[in-house]
Amino acid sequence: MEWSEEDVVLLHWRLLQELGGLGDPDTPLDEKLDTLRWVFTDPKCEREPFSFVNCLRVVSLSPLSPLPFVGPIDAESIRDWIRYHVRKWLTATIDRYPSWAAEAVLENPCWIESRLAKNPQWINEEIKKHTEQGDLFA
Image (cartoon, rainbow, N blue to C red; front, side, top):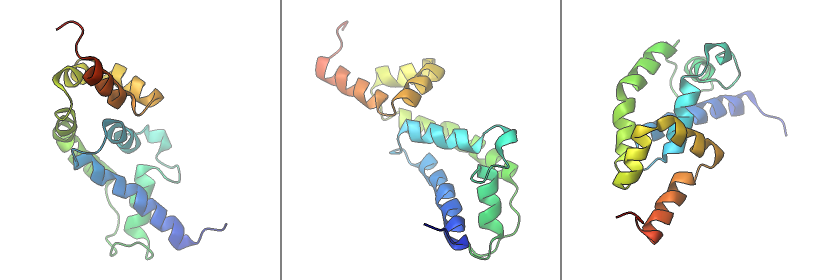
């Protein structure tokens, strides 16, 4: 199947729409972390075809974009805006967890992230397991 130029531009646009999930408390934590990894990737990767920076460039400059022409967009200013809001967005998702799960995420986020990388449903499975079994030490 061959992709048209418009299809490629729309794919870049679709990837940028993932940013909308950051502000939604119902977006799973692993999806938010994945989106943040994409936005704040290693600068060496910014020239890759579907990097955050390249998606901004394509969507803001292409006449085939679903957005009106906006001209060049400064990726760092968008990243700064995301940095400013990210704590609130992550907290809104974490606050939906039982207190023990929220504490685990806040106390050891790297460990939680590694678990989610292996199994995106890990935290949901743990919450379900604890709900069914109850706290053995309470």
